[in-house]
Length: 640
Image (cartoon, rainbow, N blue to C red; front, side, top):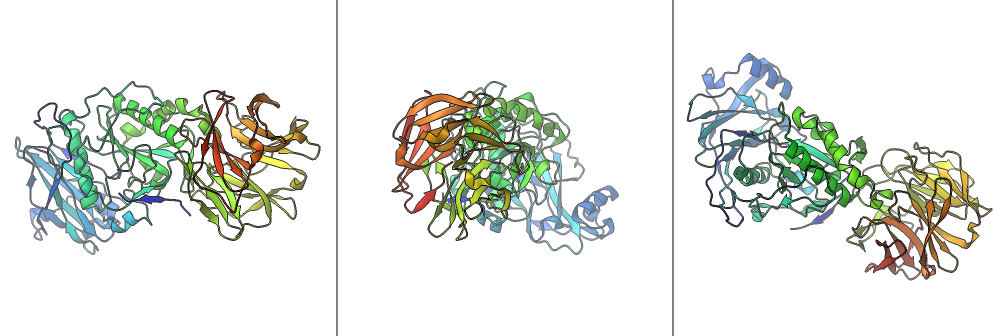
């Protein structure tokens, strides 16, 4: 089960040829620009003609890509010359049938020389596009990369495939991205310092690059962001700053009108000058599902650099822009770019090249070499944030979850958005019985997905239900026995600072014990970290409450006083008293950062189902209550 919210409203490689120039007047206001499109006529070359000829080298490379042999290849169809005037054009091919049946090649010539270049392949593979099972994927069409043609340049496309190819309805859209007098002046602000910053970087909006919003179609999907995927668009690196809005409009039009996607595939684009541009619609601070890395779109944000870095090193301005953007997105979505991420059930780096998640050369060796640099620069401002010290993301959706059940024995997850609880999501229907408590200690088995530990009522066994990375749970297995002797227990995140999740529990002697996780689904040796806990009726691993880099524990006394305890390296000691009145809550659960201020919060639920987010503030001993509009009547919310 993958939780994707719909609201109405690739590394598709991009080849630019020729020199692009635009004449614009300064100071004009941006406005929507509607690209125009026509279909270029196509024809099959006559057998034995020069147009039908394939060199041995061309045939060998193409045969490998389509799974055929050189002797069985043919030029299936080709265009006449298409020539750009004083503005860029974007062309490409689409078809019906298998994606890997055809290879699209292009050649160009300028009015200066009049000589054709050699035929060169674009790159089309199944790694570009929407995730399977989405509405967008049902409308997706096979096709080539968009090819941008500079002013005064001619281009010709041809499709090469085996004689028994299954491609039909081959088309070649020719897109004029349109012209705006604002193209020359949009994005002239200084992009910012080279180092990563948690502050939101300067990002130029869809309105500023002239997006025609009437072109979008289909729902906007939201899921999670656990990692950033780095792409390049494989076009000329000599474009001017004024060309960029038109280039983005051309990519947008080809993705929507040519490939059948609902919007531009990328979440963000970066130009060679280090300027960041908004890509797919839906909110730059939201987890918008793109069409940039098939299979992991719902777990990642896709960032494409406009340029070709196959053999050329990416400019420092580009690397700096990635670092700033990834640091900000990591703060918003609460992940560490330097740590592995679980994307669709498999582990990848928190900043990955497209080639890491799919068989492709993207983002080129000259940009891919900087992927570790981007992660290293983006991580330090994020890794110390309190919001990253709680790991309750059971459905691997990029936010912390609250566990609850009801009279029908459904296991449900509660999420917050903008500080408010959302409607519960059912994780398991009718099968959650025979359990008297359940907590999430974070990632208990080392696969970068939070797990559930539940106590079996009849036997006292502690049973682990691992998260499966795609929104559900794996089968449970017992990881401990004799836990009926523990009156209170909770996940404590990584309390002892060894990089592995821990549990804490109050035993029969009213001692507080830590049960360190071993990182592979079991326990290391437990030890006492506090005595005299008989007056503490609830314990919650709240994460780093005071921002000192250590995980803390919230204890609630019988008279309703809330006390935050800090870890001193061997035991828990009192840090601050939050005050009384907490006895009105029948359950208290760690939320991580629910209010967007990077501080950790908790959820308190009263007997009648009324709920309150109790938010930490800049003053350690002061909290702010955020009443919830969702009433949890008839639900048991687990403490912890």
